[in-house]
Image 1 (cartoon, rainbow, N blue to C red):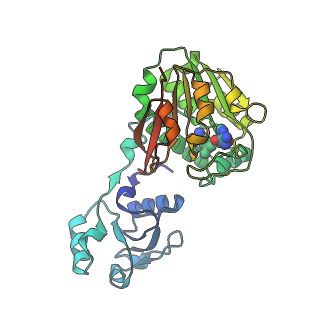
Image 2 (cartoon, rainbow, N blue to C red):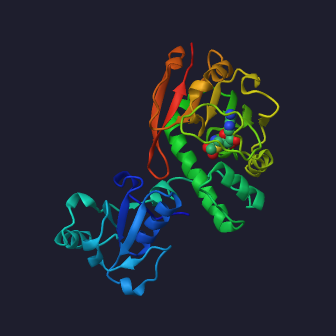
Length: 336
Ligand SMILES: C[S@@+](CC[C@H](N)C(=O)[O-])C[C@H]1O[C@@H](n2cnc3c(N)ncnc32)[C@H](O)[C@@H]1O
């Protein structure tokens, strides 16, 4: 879904109970974003013209006066106009100033205008829809063009955030180089970086496997039986984007540490270091990096350095997700 307005994720805590004020385009977009991400609960939508509305996605549209008898953490004003009038009205109803959020952020600059669509989705098939759902359980698409556009948007948004954060680090590499991506899933980052950074002449390897058992923890111990990719769909996505120089290593046939390194760049997004703490993969990763390599992994915002990290220089870079929640990228090396 391409949104015109972004829900103020930075001002509303996850899991809180809110009231959206305004059932127009902004309100609908806000409701859609929090529902898809299961971010917080909307008790109801307040709107003067409440009599004109049926429930929206199961949420009632009620008269603003209902706010007086309700429990909520925040009221999120979802209009682009009349902010001072609405603020005054809410204050007259006895709503505390720190419970009112009036900040409507236009999403357009961050999506369609300033950021082009680098990753292209092939036509949806039932198999691709299933593979996407296994990798990203919150994405439940259909075999249609709308889903294809939404997936493309989602994948490009994630890649743009990573790219903007890593651009300086990645552009410093001398090409051609040897690259290993761990857990590429359906290949969004590889496609994106290859096109943006001219990796066509590089020797690129990926390590992943088919599977349907996801054991996603948050920074937990290592699982070597949590593969959820679909290698033939990965091949299809890469071919559709004209990425040809990739050697795929199936984790069912080779251990991570035995992938033929060393590599100048080893990276993995939302797998090693994120679902499973890097601590348990560090020996393998250091072997794959050799003396001069750099490794980069997504780590959660709560990331804490662990003792083994003393063996190699590292730094963290802060980045935001498409929904503006914070995350980090951990950059390791080079060792010498
Ligand atoms: C959440 S997906 C992330 C996919 C992709 N990197 C992205 O950001 O869209 C996690 C990926 O890690 C892979 N994976 C699971 N266990 C792994 C392991 N032990 N080593 C390497 N990759 C693993 C999964 O098969 C899946 O492709």
